[in-house]
Length: 111
Length: 116
Image (tube, rainbow over all chains, first blue to last red; front, side):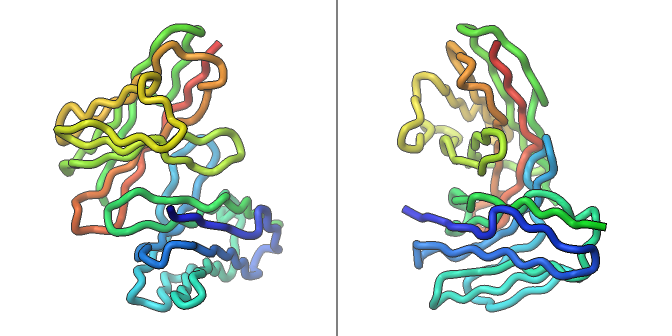
């Protein structure tokens, strides 16, 4: 089955700097790669996603890149703000099927 | 976007009792729903796939007789933790895709279960 590895487990950056979180997956049949932000005591919130037919997607300060050949994808957050502090999870799945999550990254933005 | 709700948001029960958690899709019909469990400072682990009109599919290592799943209608799936023990204390989260043609899944807000 699918296995998703996520790094780093913790990340601390200065406000205004960029943050990058990386994930690798094992199942070449996976074709959907979402990123979730989870705040304490709440369910995951989708922040951006990418499908396997696209190499990059951007939404304001957030971007995701996908390298299908290497089976890895990354989340990029630019101009970080204190409210970006949270736990971020990557995941992989096939369409409408179960999501397999990475281990999570605790991002701390230092003012 | 689509909305998924869970009830209750938190529950405390005594060891040996059962507790039911509801997951509802509020503005779409969900033939499939997923149940995840999340321990503190850990990732989400899929427990089972809830299928409307058929039996749930459990992940390896998840006791189907302990975690009863019923997909009662196209908008409701329930997870019953039977004979709960302190080690079942966790954050339970459900999700549902809007339909089989889409990729995005919508997550509920989660239910915090504490077994004393």
